[in-house]
Length: 409
Ligand SMILES: *Cc1c(COP(=O)(O)O)cnc(C)c1O
Image (cartoon, rainbow, N blue to C red; front, side, top):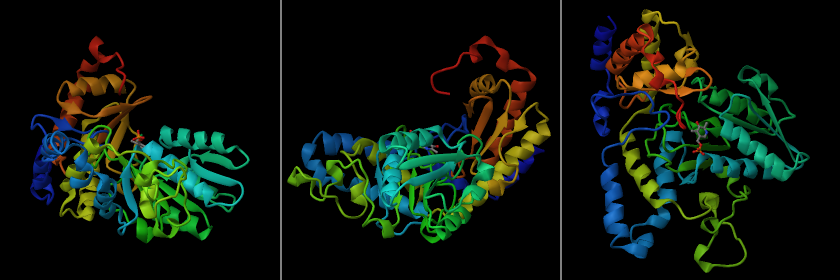
């Protein structure tokens, strides 16, 4: 039944041909694009050209001749449409954690006197660590971090809060916050917003400008498929760019880096959010990877992502497995992943990988399955569900070799 349904859904899927933009083995069912996006076609070639032509032959001249120096802004502008951001508000650089530090500090600087950050207890831990690190640096008189469970967030937004710092789609269970509702409520109370879009950019039709978001950061190696350790990005609304100051004031964020002045004078616009020399090879890979979104309607992507999630849930329901849904049951409340609890989640994911289905595990007991509407098919999901059923029913996950935890789960 599921197989027939899957074939019909695939036949009607307008995004189906886009799968050819990826260098994916046809034998593998990849349900972990939310952790590391697969290799898009054209990326190897782009990196190879940078190595052979721009580095090997052009050498230091390539900073000018190959426009290396402008890559952070250029790649930022490639990402901007995915965020619903007009030009001049996005720059590509550093990791998401580092970028979050920069924008959080910049937001705190915009506030006179003691600032209170409201965030979610279940936020991505790195985001919480970064906020706490900044609090330790600035002192608890200047900065307070308040974290509450997701369901209490809206109520906790009151005038005692100065900055709302949230992750749009939860990394562990795919739960989605209403970005527009939170941002508008925050704005009505004079609260600044910082969104981490690591699990939303590329799968949701974001409208940062229209929603009135103040700051955002996100990740280049997940749905954007920029490759392992790809740089992240920063969004700062035009209205804050004159007054916002970030503390990692390195030479790349200087108005004139090659004046080598002992005094720091901040660059105008988004360049001030740069710190040190950009990772050119990674940025070239990300830039080439972003071509997967050429001509793609993000509303169609979002529509398919909801269908994929619902289809996965229906396959899992039909299988009657001893698992429990860890994600919201309504597709409107989810990003592009659907997760399940299972007491042996780690071993099950390992056994499934040996059957050519890659998902991942998040402690303590969550099996994560991520769907990328640009390459995941409904047939992939029907097959993955039947292999998962086999692993659980035949208990193949109990084998010794699936028990030992690797460094990266
Ligand atoms: C993946 C992810 C990050 C990644 O941070 P890095 O600094 O790139 O390691 C940050 N925040 C969230 C919410 C994520 O899901």
